[in-house]
Length: 325
Image 1 (cartoon, helix red, strand yellow):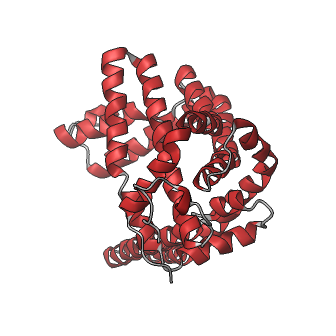
Image 2: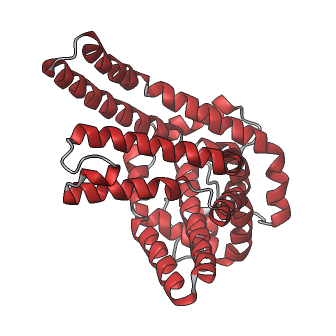
């Protein structure tokens, strides 16, 4: 088994790789993120954001929990919590129905645009980063040539989600079983049993879902590295790399928390000092830079443990040399 590599070493090599190519990589990252940017911009401009409709109802509930005034929901001031819960559910359903009637024709296409095209275009950036790590030529034209593999990238994403949810089925079955005691005989004991089973089922689904997600998370990199691979072959490649490396990958992801916080701080400061429009542009640039940095570390993680780095490490500057030996 290959020698363990620390998160710091992955991040350090990633910085060495992307530094001389940052301008072209940011442009490619921008193209890959266009569906998300278009979707978020359109929803903000048109007000097609469900939280705008649900927030007033949520605010009522928050105020009720503080004051205990059920009159906020059109009930008697001293109405019970069950009545408040029912009124809250009705108002929330009404808010969602109103949103779908008024903004659904905008929200649904934008959501599908983001969900379907973002995974399909991500192969452009991933392939470019693999070329950068291997000290091969990186260009916008070379990245755009990968568009022909976008359908396979989308199929890989969908098949990965199906397999991930299949792993969660045992937990979902326990959650479904938790409904049966209440349906058969609604007593205090049956309610307690149902709640226990629901909590256990949620925990099992969460654990198995995260485990499956980590098993398959490197499959898009495998496809970008060798587009001739089948969807199942990409999943197997990810599985083989992650089989004994899940905790290492987890620590690599966690090591970027500070950068995520810094990116959020930049967005907030830019918005306060420069206004919403310019602040959003600055925040978008910060997120693009961070996404390139994180994606490069993920690519190096896959290539290192799949023994596909080749001579890339020997070609980096001396200050980074030897970290993967």
